[in-house]
Every structure is written in C-alpha cells, then in structure tokens.
Length: 148
Length: 148
Length: 148
Image 1 (cartoon, one colour):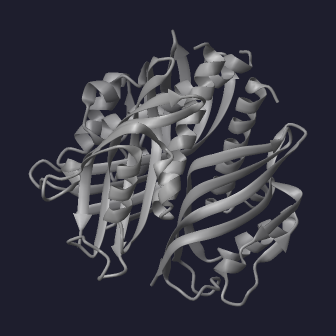
Image 2 (image 1 turned 180 degrees about the vertical axis):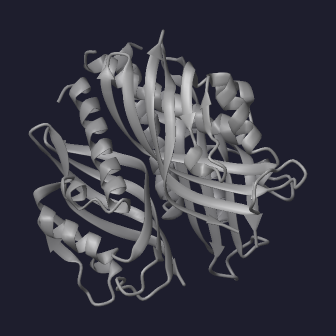
C-alpha cells in the first residue's frame, strides 16, 4: 500500500468496528454479521463459565453474540486503536473497550448477574475482502469485570 | 473529492465534534456555538418532558444547551464515528455517546434529577462552509438513561 | 508537511496515545516509557495533595506514574483529540479522558481512597523524533473527580 491507501485502510477498519459496536447495542443481527469475514473466528471462552465461546463463521458469531445479550440492555464502547498492517489485505488491531450490561427481561436473559461493567482490550485481525475491511479473528483480554 | 480531500474532511469532522464536546463540558458558549452552521437545527425533543427541544440557529442552540446544563457538572464523551459523504460539502455521521450530569447548584439547575447517566447515538449531518465542517443537524437516539 | 504527511502525523499521534493508555493500564513500564520524548515533562501537581508531580525524563515519568498506581487496578480511556501542528515536528493536542482506579492491594497502594472516578482533558505537546511522535509535555485539567 502507498500512504494514501494505508490511511484509507485505517479509516475503513475504524468504520467497520464502529458498526460492530452500534449493531451490537441496537441488536441489529444482520448489521452485526456484516462486519465479520465469512470464515471469522471469535474466541470468547475467557468470558464464559463453561468454557464455551469459540465460534466460527460470521452468521454463527452473530447468532451466538446476539443470543448472549438476549434480555439485556447493553452498551459497548471502543477506544484508541493500535493498527498494524501485516500485508496489503491484513492487519492486527488492539482496541480499548468498556461494556455495560443490564438485565431487563428475566425470562429471556441467560446471564448470572443483574448488571455487568467490564473493561479490557479486543485483540483482533482484519482482512480486506474487495473494498471492505472485515474482522477475521477477535478475542478479548479483560482488565476488570464488576458484576452485581 | 479525491482520496486525500476525503481523508482531510474526515479529520475535519472529527475535530469539530471534539470541540463540540470540550466546549459543552467546559461551558464555553462561544466555542460551542462555533461548531454549528448558521442555520443548524437541533432536535432534542426526545430528551425533554414537555416536548420542547427543537431549536434553530447556532446561537440559539448554544444558548439552549448551555442553559439546559446550568447548575450542572457535565461529562459528554463521543466514540467511533460512521461518516458518509453525500457530496463534497455534506456528510452524515453517527457517533456513539455517553453523558453524565450531576446537579451541583440547586438554585441554577432546572432538571428533575440529582444525577443522570445516559448512552446513545448522535445522528448528525455536517456541511462544509469554507474550510470548516460544521454541524448542520443533530438529534440523539438513546440506548438507555439512568437517573437518580 | 504536505497533506499526506499531515494525515500520517495525525495517525502517528493517535497511535502513540493509544499505547500510552494500554501500557498504563496493563502496567507495562517499558512500553509506557517509550511513548515519551527523552526530555519529556509531566506536570501532575494538580493531582497531588502535597504539591509533588512535576517530573522530567521518560524513564522518571514512567517510574513515577507506574509507582503511583502500584496496588491499584486502573482503567484510563482517551477520546476525541484536537490536534494542531506548530511545525513539521511539533504539535499541541487536547484529549478528553476518563479514569477509574480501584485499590486492590492495601499494602502496595499509597492512595487515600478506595476508588477514584475522574474526568478531564489532557493538554499535551508532541515532538517528532525520527519517525515517531512522542509526548513532550503533558498535564491534566480536571472536570470532576469522585472518590470513595
């Protein structure tokens, strides 16, 4: 990539992640699925009590995540990416993050808390497919989680 | 716009919104007014109890908003824009946001709460006037508001 | 700087500050020191009870700050920079910020609170040394601090 292509790629990655957050919190399943590569892999095993949370495929990831927040009101915010390109079509990105979850529907929710407030860093890779930068792998390293 | 002009426009929009937040929380009336187009329209009717909150003109918007936070300590943060250009001089932008308000002066404050902690997305349009990207329309869609 | 160089410089500054935050909260002393110019000056006297907090030199700053958060779990987030270049190799930047500190080890912690939740703006200058934008001066202007 030349410098302009690199700057455009940076904006492309930021826009994809912005959509990730908005579609997650507005519970937009199709929009959320659209930010992942078809063969994306999410590893959220560190988040679960039962060792589950390794999911493959954009559609499966979207169903898993939106299912996990069923019955919950959620806010996820991302900050301050560190982006490194490993080729013209691939990049590694770390994002600071904060999330808040509130149980609003006891019947639909499957979580063992009333509220959760967490902090950490997403560690991700992105792949460019045609003109879009999509999430290829994603995991979360926590700084802290408070639940009540 | 070519690619470089587009990238500069993206930075221009981000800088305008950064000033919006800083001037709001530092209660800088002139600075806050300067981020709006002369014919800007703010629609915060969703935020009010009485259906008010539709305001036109940069100066009127600044007076309305700074008046609304009179007697309050406030923190507003913005995150992760999604920017789409509709022409060389206009754009639509969605920002994630979080706001916190604390009543610090009972006499000056006009709000029915002690503290407010909210989350949502600004939906905005921007217009380029000379070399500045200014807010042309702004409204707020809430994810959640907690008051005490 | 031409426009492309300016855009690259903006991304360079953002990446440096992203590393500042991540290395602070993950307690990475060497990484944290690496974001400062050798002759950097930090003025955190406004944060201290005893008037201390003026520190010079990247290594001294890192030791001072990481020492200050010893025994604490911390989350620092930055938002929405306003960047102004004063030359091809220097810039002034304001960042919105929020920080949370929790005492987790009474023996190691030197702070007079159990938790701190603060908000404000970093006012910084950056200098380009070779191809890196490094923090040359940094101070913090608070909007609010709540402790318990």
